Image (cartoon, rainbow, N blue to C red; front, side):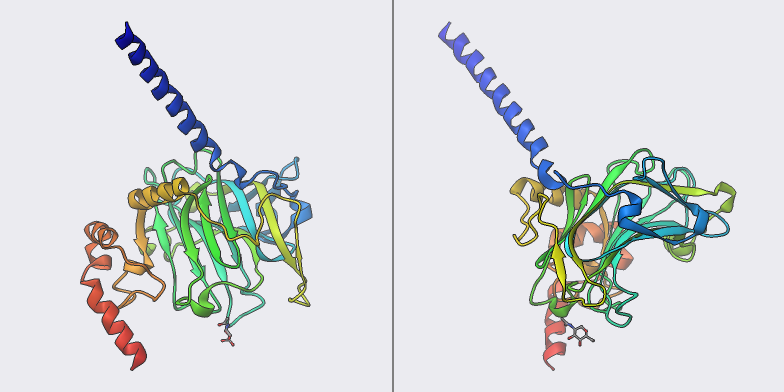
Length: 337
Ligand SMILES: *[C@@H]1O[C@H](CO)[C@@H](O)[C@H](O)[C@H]1NC(C)=O
């Protein structure tokens, strides 16, 4: 009988522990978008290009961007932002989408032509039956030669439903999220120097013909037989510090919402574990491991030998060669000499 009781008790214990951990794992991300206002299109954005290929919905908050033989289309935030949380729920076009690029990004390339900053989500279409690829990129202060691309698969079909894609940008950190899972973190470091984006940017969303590079390096072009390609955007969140476009030093922060941009954002250990899992499973390209591009990885890269090995098995040409430690040493010698 005692044994039975103990048995029941331990079952109960296991049960309650699993309930607890289930509830923490669902609540651990909840505050990310909590209380953040969704702006209507007219209040937050302007039409950028593509005339009738941009359609706003009756609710005023959802937007369709389409690409056809004539043109792609896009919109841009009315304000410039210095730091903030930027998010959109996006549903990508389905079926044959090779060569099609959908981008959700921040940039100040129109103001700072020679030393611009940029934070990108780019969605690269694919041939029928093959998944979309997603790419993140970070440019800081004009170093367009130093691309900081990463490319991933996803754990869902992004053309089947809406998913949330977000960029958190503070003085010290940049975090890319997909559905509240952090997928990439860039921490400001000495090594990055002026390459950490630190000038005001606008938010953009576009769809365009990327035939020359988007799918297998340009092997598969956009086929207008399947046009129009329609990307749907909703739940657009712009939350941060707006900047006067004339007097760039005049910064006005929205303090009403839940994200405090002055506090260094840190991922919880759960979030970090999820991020590592995602990257282990789905990352298929990282500039830090691309030996065809960088003889030695840019200085901010923290090279993980297991990651290097995994990517090397996946693509021996791009990620081949080694050993990395020699390259690091040569790099340092070059820099000092
Ligand atoms: C950014 O680039 C400009 C022009 O090249 C340079 O003058 C400036 O010092 C750079 N800023 C940082 C933070 O490195």
